[in-house]
Length: 116
Length: 115
Image (cartoon, rainbow over all chains, first blue to last red; front, top):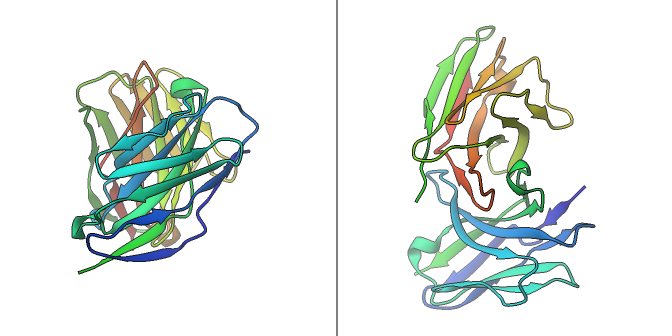
């Protein structure tokens, strides 16, 4: 079974600074998808960024980028120029290559605090 | 982007009664829907996977007779918590995957309180 590990229960960063959230995973598959989701107090799950394992290039979405190290099974999220609105729970998630039939396996989450 | 709507957003029910939560994909056909449970300050735990027109697949440890899942159409899946108990109180959230399977869309979630 796949597992996702987020070793940082909580992180704090000054506004406008950069922060990196860690995520490691364990799988025997060679093809899969990795995601970072943001969950604000409203509990709505918001997709931040997604990475296909077969792509070597790291995904980026504006201020959000990932460092995907397939051999090390590591998938960290870097948030640049942190903003107050970035404060939320961040979940790393794994999805197998079974297409639409596979659900997401989530890590335990990292609570990100933005200091003004 | 695609929209998944979940209803009700909050429900309170008496212990021993049943309660139904609906998950609808509003602008796409959801071949697969997923139901998750989230306890306070914890992560999302996959409960079951439902495919349109077939029986749901439950994760280990999830009671299929207690959490009834029906996926009768390509746009609707329902979760019924039967004979609810206070320990069933939780945040339940659904997600849906379209035909391409590449992206998963989440509903807004439902707070269930059993008193």
